[in-house]
Amino acid sequence: MPQLCAALGPLESQKEDRTLPLELRRNTPGALARREASSAFASAEPVLRKYTPDHVEGPGADTDPTQAVFPGCACTTAPCLPGTCSCLRWQENYDDHLRLRGIGAEADHAVPVFECNIMCQCSDRCRNRVVQRGLQFHLQVFQTDLKGWGLRTLEFIPKGRFVCEYAGEILGSSEAQRRIHLQTIHDSNYILAVREHVSQGQVLATFVDPTHTGNVGRFLNHSCAPNLLMVPVRIDSMVPKLALFAAKDILPGEELCYDYSGRFLNRSDGEDKDGLDNGKLRKPCYCGAKSCTAFLPYDSSLYCPG
Image (cartoon, rainbow, N blue to C red; front, side, top):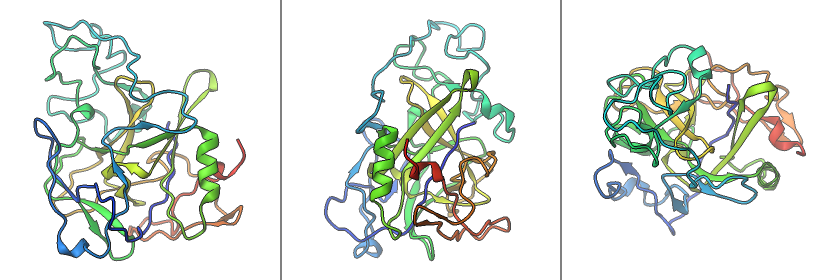
């Protein structure tokens, strides 16, 4: 299972280089619809120097996330189905309503998710093309009472539907650790480490940093009882898109949150429980859930030499 860790907090005020759309509507032909920020954000805008809907190659990255490496399927007349479509090696990923299958079953998320890609001969309307379609719901960045900036939905999202990605710079492990060590105790950490256990005990690690170059997923806060689930999804590249799906029906106005440690992970795996590691104090959790563990998940391996 992937291992996820990040720490989001209040963002500093910065008026220049404002490129983030504070309200995001579903994708339309041509470009992402944007709205002007309301006056409530005039004195304290979210810091994001460059908005990107997809991963970009950063220092130390082994793979260019924009490079297509997978061969496409040859499903020109028949629909893409397991057994006939080369992209569906294990099972169908989505149902007729574009909902992720097995959203409530831990075992199902151990199965890799591959969508049809740019080389495939199937239609753009193929049911195995979901994450690549981008935002389908109206989302809004807003200021929370205790957690700094957050992200909420302005419309109903059914369980299993794709919500957004967590996109940013793809880093090498050394660069991720270098950036972590430059942070002070007061800095917000957005670097997320994803570890996927593959064959023969090998672990495939991906490091994503949306601190300055990223997308709306950067503003997602942690919850010990999350309404989103992060799933690595591969389309064109071996670098996974970190896709967030609704773990339950989500009502308009609800804040969108996910578990920074990974929803089904053993918390003892890579997480520091002492609250202090190399001078880095764990930060308090303000999710308000009955199951709240009092502190944000913390991946001590990011502070250790590679």
